Image (cartoon, rainbow, N blue to C red):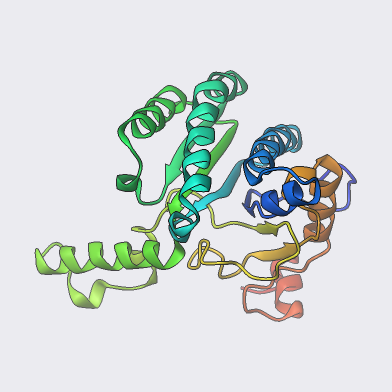
Length: 252
């Protein structure tokens, strides 16, 4: 499928760091939690955009494992916002045909939020229009460590030989193992780093950064990211000539 401007294919999977909520609020002399509420509305616009363009999967970095170290008042406000969003938005996501899932260390959330997360996943489990993954209490290093731990347990139990431990075996135990790796990574807010997000999965992902703060993201912003993606040559370690040969059937 081509993007709206007709210049190339759209990504199958977009991963986004939604940065800039706090700065957006500070610019308006408002509490940081107001920025997070505005950011939640931007999530809705992003979901609508992906559905309109035919993007099959989107993963949003909502709350990192390091974010628990933020001021207690802000963390508490974020948890209330998270719970409220689960109560308000899940039925609409289900109606739109989106499957919702959560990746990260769930044990750190309280029982009310855990129950809502599980209910949302159960309700939307059969949907296929958009695979919407929310990274909450998530860290890329943590993800790799738990996959390595799972491999070690399988070897210790005799389910796997040491010589069978390879990239595919580790990938199969990572978060989002059933989805294609992200084709396009977007970070808003002007920072030029991936901040411990999907470290394993982003190995060959195209990276796009914008100074736009997350609450200000709209369809035009997202379209610029797609246009950037459409102009990239994805080589996966090959030369341009090899990529062209594969496209025309000239290389076996």
